[in-house]
Amino acid sequence: MKKGKIFIISGPSGSGKTTLYKQLLASQNNLAKSISVTTRPQRPGEQHGRDYFFVSRKMFDYKKRAGHFLESMKVFDNYYGTPKSYVYKLIRSGKNVLLCIDVKGAEVVRRKFPEAVSIFIKTPSLEVLRKRLTDRGSEDQATVDLRIKTAKDELREAKSYNYVLINDSLQRCFAQLRGIILHEITQ
Image 1 (spheres, rainbow, N blue to C red):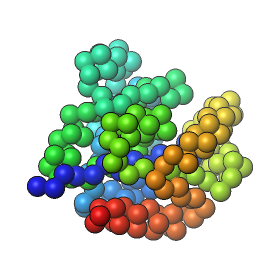
Image 2: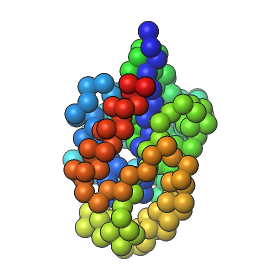
Image 3: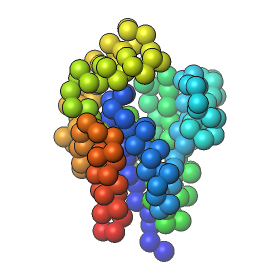
């Protein structure tokens, strides 16, 4: 049986990566979702076990010490981890795994899986990114400023990805992303 591939989608908060990730999963039955574990508060509309596994900091630390994660990172005072056993099981069964993780987590996964296909999503400008973050309404101004500062660092890492897409139109970016995934699966 052919092993599955790992696809990594990363980008700054507000770039549209999570929306694109969800659209891909809904439209492609040849992709499997890896559900991350996080300590961050649940946002409206999110569901435990579907979007994330929401856990306490104490439980996260326990899972990390037990070697449960393929990668784990602290992002904006919250912790995120990718469950290792689930990803390995999917790959061995021939499934293509789609990871939506931050730049630091992507770096860790790419070191462990150099054959992983990495795709960086960015906005046309930092001004557009700021507007998206502000319009989202889930963060105060100080948090938006911090996310913009972090985005500047993340954008410098974009060149290390296999593909970089500019999300100036969700529909167009999705079509490009889907095309990349389908192309890479057939390789």
